Image 1 (spheres, rainbow, N blue to C red):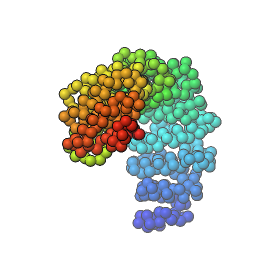
Image 2 (tube, rainbow, N blue to C red; image 1 turned 120 degrees about the vertical axis):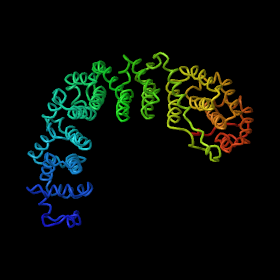
Image 3 (cartoon, helix red, strand yellow; image 1 turned 30 degrees about the vertical axis):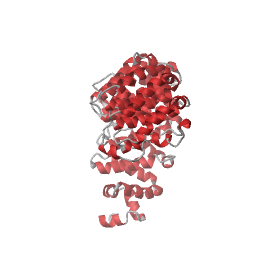
Amino acid sequence: MHSLDSHQYYSTVNKLTQFEMEAILGPDSEPFETFISNLSRSEVESTAEMMKQRDPNALAFKTVNFLSSFHVDEIDSREKCADLLGRLLVDDDLSTWRNLSISTQSAIKSFLLNPIINFEESKFITKVRRDTIYRLAASLLPDNNWPELLPFLYQCLTDSASNNYLKGLAFHIFAELAEDIGETIVVPSAKTLHSRFRNTLNDDTLDLDVRIAAVSAVIKFIQCMPSSNEKERFQDLLPGMMMTLTNAYLSKGEVADEQVLKHFIELAKNEPRFFRSQLVDVVSTMFEITEAESLEDRTRHLAVEFLITLVEAKKRAPGMMKRVPLFISRCFALLLKLLLDITDDPAWHSADTLFDVIGPTSNFRVGRKCLDRFSLALGGKSIAHVAIEQLSAYSDAPEWEKRHAALIALAYIAEGCSKVMIKNLEQLVTIVLNCFQDPHPRVRWAACCAILRFLYDFSPHFQENYHNQVFLALAAAMDDSYPRVQVCPTIYECCKFPKKQLQAKTRLDYH
């Protein structure tokens, strides 16, 4: 290795001689530092694979020694070395780890649990260290082959001198272990960790990232508890979890918002009953997020997803959301409002294809999809009267966006509410057919598309009772002055059939 200059070394990186590998893995630190510092991450990885086959113990020792050297301050080199250590230790079946000597394994464990090693310099290094600990622990803890780990993690959470990095590290690892080997780690640790969770979540002076990590760990623990009584013991943590959520979205930090909300969605999906005792407060907070236009759309959409997830969890928590005062009306109004976010792009008017993606925003698409899910989950008995009242008001509004939204919403709730709404079909058909004369082409186009959904969801009653009015309206639409309306998919589908055989063969996603 010493006999090669940098240019010669690069040219032979994938063809290391026995002498060069011995130098890199030998007692002198300089060849290994040159190897790490001068090559790209992919080159280090491919070359290290050869050295791993030759002497994994030496390579592991070299890697740990490099990362333990505080005078080595080049972040890029440390990241490459951390990545190398992670790949070395946690391959698919941990075969490399199992082939290391007991002394090498002990040295690596000590390094990974050394609380004074400065890993805070890089999020990448932090993540690699955390993932390495977790992957090894998931394999070693069930057989009690890493007895030092749990006391180390408890100490990180108990010691007031522990920095944010160590607290966050401990919570992250507990969360991962709960998901992977919950039966081994959760029940024995739950009582000990409960007070750590509570103290962390209720302390708004702590770093937000630490509290988010605690939320994640709590949610993983709840899902692993073997009985409902044991899950209930975590109820007193919910106020602190909600405070963390509030702090996250008030901080206007999009990543923090998304992290906490995704954790809440996971819990809503798998343990919806956990929210029962404070459901009104939880739902109110989620509505605040969804209605806060100053927040990122992605954050607001996740809050909507949480609400819809709770609605869909009817088998695990039957009737729970229906008992929240005014929830159905407020949620329907929220989803309807999302449909107003559509732009009237001039390109839409002249397009001559069946389907289009011009105009609808992410808000519009989320509102449309969630209205479908909302109606299917709750059914017509719960939402039909609310929907008809709000849609009637929208259909009479002066703004074309509201008239358009009413038609789109009507089309997307038709399936879930068909058994109830068929009783009001005369009123709904009148709303739709009147919109065929609307001054705005997007509204006329939406009316055509609503008809297509009616053909399917109210069949055969709709065909039998309204085919004359529908054909007259569609015939007029074929002469519309806007090409987009002329090629509406409803016209394309329906005009293939004789009047008395009017029917829908497919359900088209017409936006």
